[in-house]
Image (cartoon, rainbow over all chains, first blue to last red; front, side):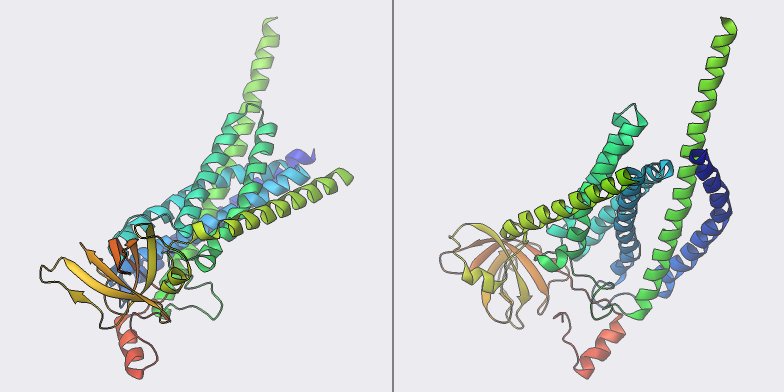
Length: 245
Length: 148
């Protein structure tokens, strides 16, 4: 029964990882927030508003990273029919949607004092909004089918179609004139951000990454537990039905 | 095994074709995807007076003129090659100053003066503490607010 062998191995492995990923997330978050809010200098132009970046940028990175992960898991599910891969993609979607929402909301809060507007329809902001809709569409598609296998296949195809949006988001600020500034960290020629500000940014990014790992593992375990529960309930109902006749 | 391989090739081919299609579409809509034109791009294309457009560039040093009623401000937006004169009355963003990147939305008048309805400040990709900015400026490596 290799179908069940893999989920049980996953349960053992995830139980071993969870305490460590939780601890890493909490430690990085505490140290990261201290550096982001207290120990880092204000910006020469934005002054204290720069601190929004320490949430905005990690959230935006994770929004894109989660989508790449979701698409990869979807492709694995589609090609190799691995049961755990579809569940992994399904479990990642709400986390990615939350990251995307946080990136958009904090961006609007930063845009108002800095640019003078909450929102503009430039290529970067619009493509990230499309990313949010892709996540929501993916989640809706999973719920639109009664048959899980068909739901997984339809959602996986949507996830793969949406992958073209990732390079558009990343390079939108270079291909077209946008109000959003170009990349400061992941760029050719090295970061254009002072080391005293790069440190809290990377700490927060680490915290977000381990948050993702922790919540993802918990959500997959929840999905597996839900499946097990449905099987047990189904068998019990069938047994009681057999008992009455 | 062959069915898995076939599915793998189909997914790879599908994503590749989708990528090419997306690239072609985005290339075709290039003009609609840019948020603003630089003054050079503005000069290169036919813009009818009254057509709503956005122009982006740096506020030229020493070009800001405030009118007596203090609500109207005139300044020049430049990309160092070409420039356009802008007139605007209303609230300016905090970051608005000489040497700063801005995007102005409005229309070009018949006299070639751009009348703006909205002025947005553009932030560049440089983040640093004030001391570092001062030190860099003193050393003459970098123009404050002028971008790179």
